[in-house]
Length: 205
Ligand SMILES: Nc1nc2c(ncn2[C@@H]2O[C@H](COP(=O)(O)OP(=O)(O)OP(=O)(O)O)[C@@H](O)[C@H]2O)c(=O)[nH]1
Ligand SMILES: [Zn+2]
Image 1 (cartoon, rainbow, N blue to C red):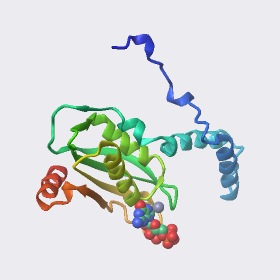
Image 2: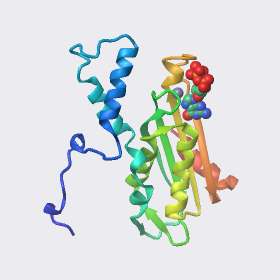
Image 3: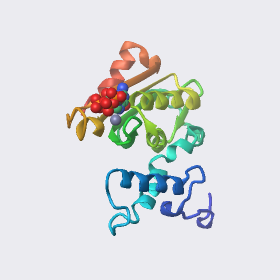
Image 4: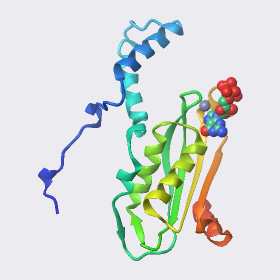
């Protein structure tokens, strides 16, 4: 067991990701403000380029993270039946318009022969890792299921994602409240009976 002094307290506000060029983002945001006819030097906007750069470093931080680092810690608790974590809330960014899409992910798997089971929180961390990238909902869904397959080697895996895309709500076609559902299913969970069990657990509110 580690003692408390082994833990490093990190304020996420102060973490500077060397993979994200914040000054470059800030310069681009300054240009956008000029281009829309705003005055980037006015009081309310003067810190905005730097703020947006910091916010982008956070909302795109998943680009530089490896799912293996989340799923490498697994344990055998002798459970070989379906595990479902549902209603995992998340925010992502539409790669077409760079505006948010958000909703809930439901993640399930049947542990493999080796009985590799991961911590429940790791499934939510996995959703966030892929959500914090420029995304489309279909790829987000597939990447989560493929990471489960690769790193947990389960007998089956299922991911269902339900989202509202603000690019469809606040602009363009302007249909707020529209929900898009995507799913990706692998292995034994493709069989009708196990798939039906998983879907009833996921969609039963
Ligand atoms: N398949 C898919 N499409 C998405 C996603 N997010 C946004 N889109 C769509 O991407 C499409 C981009 O279409 P374009 O015609 O290139 O762009 P646009 O002129 O801004 O389109 P509108 O949104 O219809 O105004 C739109 O239909 C969006 O609804 C996503 O996660 N998956
Ligand atoms: Zn969009």
